[in-house]
Length: 109
Image (cartoon, rainbow, N blue to C red; front, side, top):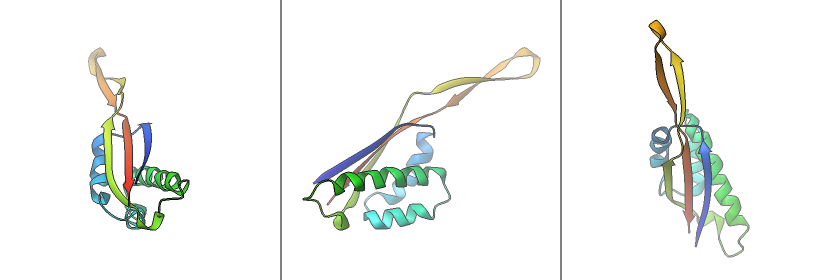
């Protein structure tokens, strides 16, 4: 049985999240959470929250054994981009793109 959880409009670039997500794909939930706990990346904290949310969703279902859950897939899509500008020399302006992510975690037995 599959259990899903997602976080939308997270203010971090999807490429930064994908780097960390690829390290925990296919691992047991306990192992994935312990790996993420000791990673120095900001996206590791966000991913661990989404995985814990999926575990809490699985806990609501009586047929699912939480100890046997694995991270089946982590999908990181790009959300809307916030467009800002920074003043530069001689009256010019440069665009700054503040990217957002949609993170979806799928756990399976």
